[in-house]
Image 1: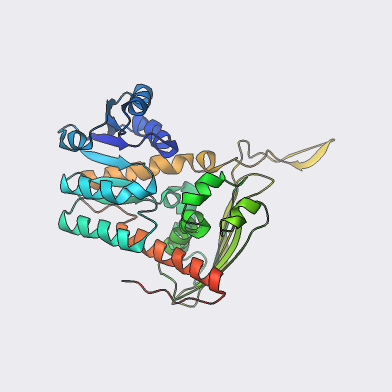
Image 2: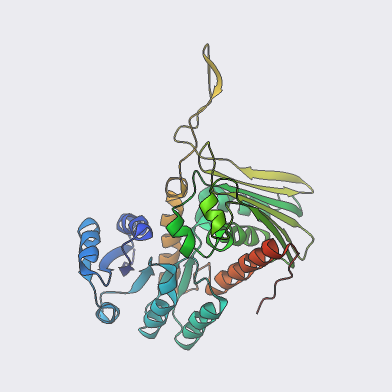
Length: 335
């Protein structure tokens, strides 16, 4: 299998998701861990066997670096995309591209001026259950799609410092569901109606954000999409999908460490708790996403989950924000 040398940019939580996945993939080799703080880069490099570097120009000029994985804070993505594109390096970038459509346009202009393979990290597309549901829909198992529904509830609210820089619940979290359901449906909404409330964490409400939201998307075909999100869930990380059509229905179920259902003298239908958080529930999806990136570059085809997909998902997420704050239905405009 042809091998690609990667530069992992960043040393935060998502970098530590991708580091082990890079090492586990037979076609990927971690060459460099980049952080402008060399001590932080060195700690991650010691874990994953790459070379620590704090000069991005040196990283991008290194002939052993065939591609980059951007796992840095969102507000750095566009600058790093521009630099990597100018250097001719294929790019895998964590979502979202940015929180601003203007800055997303700037990144896309850089990719147009310096065409390199680019993939956005909408990892939930690469979860085996989600991908199987989409394939069932595409094979016609449920006939015409009438409704798509997504439940995405997190076990507990994030730190308030994270909320303040997240771009808001719709842009930070609902955007995953938006991209996933538009991908399954094969179309983008003509109408967006969203509402939100704050029921769990008053600090989040004080920031003008929500900890519980509901979103309805109306597709050009007439299909309706429902997304419900919660930043608190007493029983774990609740992640389910349902596609309902005129000929049937398909669903994904929650994951547990042990999926057996047990019946005995002390209990009936007892099961293990749900997977606790996205790092456990979607662990395989991050590997699969990197595998798609590798396969696309080796085959010379565009990776899936494009910059245009990221722009569309952000457009819809921002329409959700507008709808929830104004209490009206929004008709998003795509360009």
